[in-house]
Length: 458
Image (cartoon, rainbow, N blue to C red; front, side, top):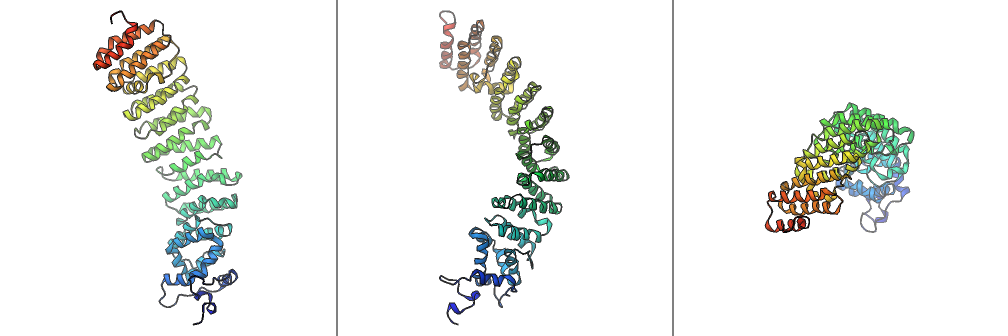
């Protein structure tokens, strides 16, 4: 049989020290020779072992180690690409040609998806991956196009490659299933800013137009990504997204709906000033329907300050939503609402704080967060009314919180200039504490706090 040096490259042993064919030698084989048919009875594994040492150095030169690993890990694609006539698919693709003699579409899809996420060079990306995509049925092209867009190495080719991918995507998406199309649209929306600036609005309109044709249950993620894209600063674009979104959110699953509503609330200030309050209350109306996903509420509360003509109404709407939540969520969001009280103006801030404390469903949560944390209004009478209302809510607190809350109220009363109202508040404590079901130790603690303000011998 002769030693290894005398054997043809394809039949040299693949062990240590085995000579590897030169690039020139391998390129000559791949350049135009017909594919070598399998030997009689040879399985895909055996064929791969025989041709692997000949093929993989060439592949590695174009793909790099990461690409080689990704290619080899897709065993079905790799083995079938090596079997008989079909190995020309792999070799012709690496050589920069269109896929030919393709195996089943599923095989091309598996291989193309795997390769599209590999760390690659320009010589590999466009001819092989895009070549594979153009060989796929249009209905199967979505996933590899997505992965190619997400590949950070794609930016090496600049905006031209992205525009080519966008063009392929829009040509194929009408033939995809609605779910696959929605997924691809989301990835396209995320990468709009990779396109040449003059083409971004064109493809933005294309994405929005396709969303308008799709079922209302889909495309929540796409609409979010359009809103989050920093390159889209056209207020008319955002208004279209808000309109489409509020048409679709009632039909979405609760988690998708809450996520999209929260993103809409977050970007309210990117709308024209006159439209912000309109969409604020549109988002709020839908968010109130769901008591289990409260993320939109936080974004809405943050935007109350940016609605100069509708702050009080917006505050009242958010308070009504908070009042309908369970105790766990209510105690958290009441504190957030208290933080925007100063933006309501002096008169409305006092009314708003009284509303926070006066609501039976929210009073316990307000007093439990601690009165000192609430920014009190300047007017003495308003401060007195707020503290008095807090005292009226003490019985609704857990026993372990009652003494601490009363102490906080007394701290407020004695450390601020309440004038005659300070004495009135102390009298209120003395008259109401009998209804608070306090232990003897707790009762004595409170008496020790108010004794300096009471008659001798109290």
